[in-house]
Image (tube, rainbow, N blue to C red; front, side):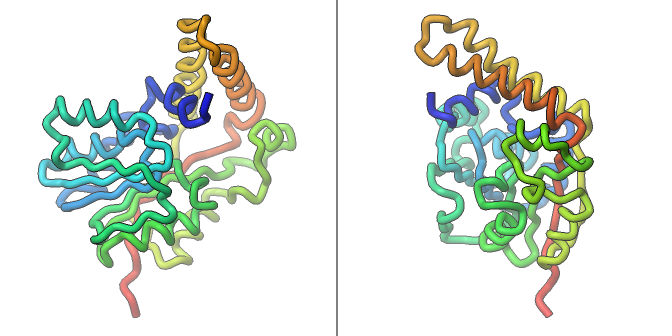
Length: 249
């Protein structure tokens, strides 16, 4: 099964696709989009963040870009049911190369920095689409504590892939961004996300025993659960930052 399809199945019960509670997402989005006219989500997944943003602001227009496009039809249908579809556009394209005709008041990229090669290039991509006085909301992993070799091996990661929290914030600050607010995901938020991720895959595999992809999906669930519980639980953190840029000098 295609990895994008597996990811979509894994997020069936947690479509925001990051270790954040629904309450946290709503609070961060309210800070980001209140009083704004347009929002762009780079690496939008199925577009669930944008649905929530549109519910917050009845005058907002939203564009999401993701290379997969998995789940777009489902989110479009939900937007139609809620009367939001005229304000939502989802684009299947590489967010690194996609170009918009206009700049946006708000740019989101939460849990998608891997697609750009890290936090710094993600912020650079976001800045290219943002009005000079606009707001950026970005979510990125960091090391809560130094990872063990076992944690790195299970994650398939290198120590250099992330810094600690202070380093992550400083990456933004040193590139001309001013942190306005931040949220560090709690262990409870992480656990809820990971149980949902692994459980959704296991449930699908159990419900579709005759599907040719059933064994692969179950294996992915088991491997991910082990990587989490035996490796990065309590070691890998996640920070979401609300940012604005320094004015040009």
